[in-house]
Length: 452
Image (cartoon, rainbow, N blue to C red; front, top):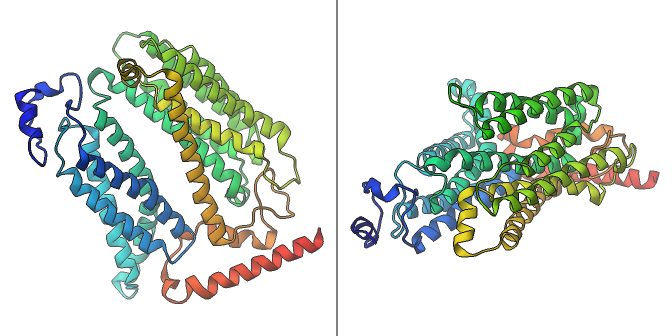
């Protein structure tokens, strides 16, 4: 251990005034993480990985436990924040992304807390009455954004704790985590669409593939013009990534055309398979990288193929029960995304150093993917239970979960409850009104059962 490292690991707390020579090849020193930093990680994952998403769902459902859970999450976050400034042991480069992004996290939480308290005061007269609608919207947007912001900070924290994505590895690392996170998000959105997205899609007269195609097109345009540093010589990586961007916006355009007027199309699924094939042939610089990239490619291709089978063969118009097969596309996309995030050069180099084989490592990554899937499913199921959302009804739904015509607007309102004003909270909103909805739902289901 160097003199500088010993100086900052011998006592409590950490310093930002570290010798730059400590971070020539890594963004972290070699000391153990330490108990306090481990507690910091535990508290932050609990707050942003569990409590804030749960609080958001409770807010969507207008449940009385929304505020207590959000307060608990904030309390856990505050404790974790102070633990980060009291740790000993391993030190980190002062300018890492995890540190500067913490400012965004802090101000988002503070703004959400202040706005929540203000709205609970129900100040509606005069000047307050003019400001309240804008504050309500900001509060709701922040409430939905904090779990996403927290996810980004957790990922940056994992990277920082290992000292990865530093120096020449930054670009390659960013590409893996951004693309991998995109596949995970895509899988979660497909799961939401499968379970509760039907009414919203029907109201807008669009299919899931129409939105998918637009995202693919825009993402392809961005990749086409940003993957190569203009003015610099082209290399094999530039050719691979830029060509991938071109095929994305070209195929995305076809998907947009074919999915007009609510029609379903397999173009996004075909593009996922083509992307998987391209990644399997991607040039690698680490010996064991080819194996995990192939594993990722097979998983991603399975997601695309299973989606094609779902759209063409599993989904039947007029059949409203969710088939077990329909869970395969979102699950495989989430698993593929986690595999891709875990396949950076530095991660694979560390595996070689500590003698862990790719198969064991992949099993651990896939376990994280299954946990993400079941957690997302549980959050959706909690919302369905609290809002008494019907999972099936005798109504043509063009392939999505749907409800009876007279209940459509009510369910649409429930699904966007987090975007509604909280003025009724003190007037029995969590009591009598919810009971009325439950009684109406029971009546509708009884009528449906009698009809069958």
